[in-house]
Length: 170
Image (cartoon, rainbow, N blue to C red; front, side, top):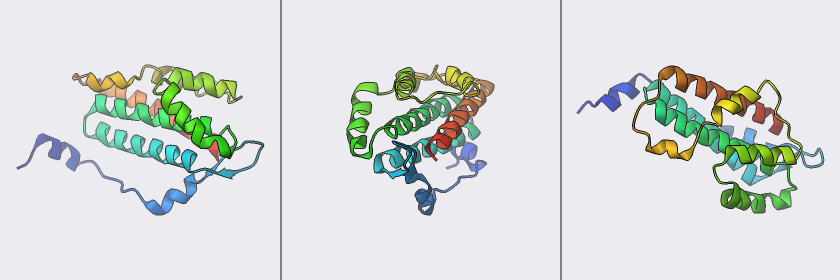
């Protein structure tokens, strides 16, 4: 049986996840200027890019609200990755647990936590953060589709944030 969902996704090229590319996410930035290995940071970074890829897929299929909802998690994961990377490696697991318990899905709080650790968001990325700040996990309850232009702008802002954070983690 051919459904609208299948027809909508049939025209979307699916990019397969390549596990051999995981090595590029294993190195993280700083703590005393040294590059350290951290499973926690690498995991959040990988998940951020996966959620973004999935959000792009949804957007191409016309699922605008779902694309925005899922891409918000990409920002959350990437900012958590960046925050955790600011601590000594021995603290990464504890910081991950703290983020899950205390910070949760609060992008504004993540931004403030990063600022306290000296991570300054450049002016070129601030408009993207302002736009993405409208995201909330409560979007999962929205049944109405968002306008395509709104969703495209939102995902473009998410991409700008992810690219900036990736540069900070490299």
